[in-house]
Length: 342
Image 1 (cartoon, rainbow, N blue to C red):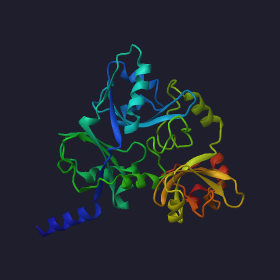
Image 2: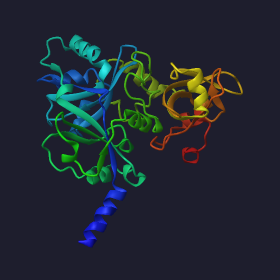
Image 3: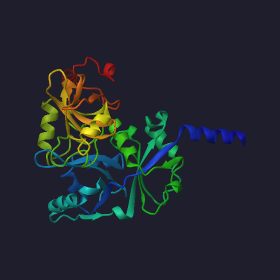
């Protein structure tokens, strides 16, 4: 009995998680005989990847190769005719309109099923856990499939935790162990920003952003071997022949009180300058207090940066999950070895 109690306390100590309902996200169900072929011609990722997983990250682009919407797609019934697409809640109407425009006479049905389900992100409180995908999922100890639609490691990167989709009325503690629930969405957003991840229309303005600058390749969100899709030309050409001169990076905002005082209504989308040259070095895209994400010119990331017209230093960093960098990017970032800068 004492041995079991010690083991239980050890589990609680080292395997404790925070579950956050993502009520700012919605689910669109796309199903029908032509669904796989239909989505394959629209999204940046390859629908054939569902042979190996039941969740992929992807984007929908416009004809100019700019991001319209980012999304996570789930193959919840393990067949090629039914998918759940997770997107920003405020993007639902336009997203469904776009899908309807391209559907034509295909056998595809499009439904907003947000009211039937709930999306959760489960984050590990202990660094020992969240670095390992299998450990995190195993430690949650999924109790039953009843009420649990999806239990999947975040397809963007394992360090982002586990995505759950449950039936709306399901109680989370009936499905997983060792989870405390928080309704504070800022905890989740801060976690994303610490990892240098943008998500949703609040972080990625529709029709303005270039997917490679938002690290779509690093996040397993694009296929360069599939057939054509909307916006493919710019993405493929830039990837194969060009250098990415700006990338989304996590930043620490020093003297945040000064920033919030002077820009209380529009903290995001502020210009970042190089203090030595006074030239534009990037822009702050979003933040939760001192933690933010910014689009930074790579040859400026190690410089002394600050918000324009404010005494607010900005400190970018390289996320630990970035893969080894190619030589062109190393040259652009003025680093000799990726490992020495992380």
